[in-house]
Length: 324
Image 1: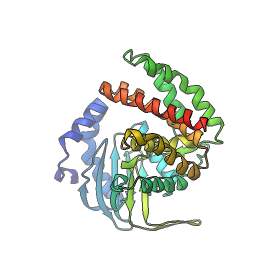
Image 2: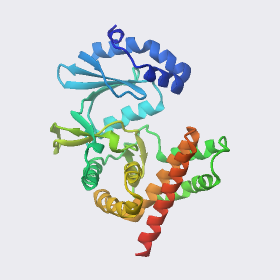
Image 3: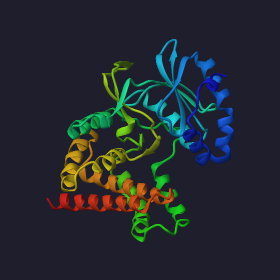
Image 4: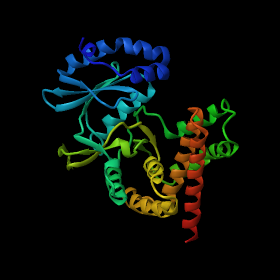
């Protein structure tokens, strides 16, 4: 078996066992056979382990037709299936291409993004904003009727239901969480039909790509930047910019945060064709969800407080911009 010659990091093995428990343990036992099945099916050679593993096994390899590829195999579960289905729908527009996939194996054959440095390698904030805005322009995919993807509104409903089991949730955060259904409904109603959302489009998931591609039907991808690892939800398009802004704003000095928000909203508003106030509303919604997830994940209290501090900043921006 091919995987027997590759040493999996203990940290990866522990993460799979902790996150998926018995299902994860069974998957780890079956993993060598899964890899062999994928190698045979896709005629892969020259396999080597990625240095960055999270919740999926990623192996780089060569394919006789597609050249350098990435084989991604995960524990079969809802989030993995959503990623597989959404990446098919994007068809290389803003994202890496998926050459083939097999849900029964929990596997995807993906193009390898080379050289692959992430967006934090760009020191100029304005350049980071422009690169991300260009990704937004490309990622406009309306879901088919049979998309079988989860809805962003389900994230809100699920968080509210589970919050009853987390009495340690700060009262301020709990009150904000219960306001989200009406706020998100307003956001959806104001922005036309739903789109397929990446929903985790932060700096680490935007990589430099040196290749150009002809996707057909008038689509040509120039060398530049591509996204990876979509979550694959269906919802209001303004939500897409939230994760980037939440990450970016932490790198900005306190006295420059409001101006940085104004600059990002100005650039992203043009890219998405959405008013700045609407993007700010989407940012507030995603921030509250993310902060609540910190509570669920038993993150340090200072992380939760940092999330609430972000919320106050975003509300201050909204108040300031409305006053102009």
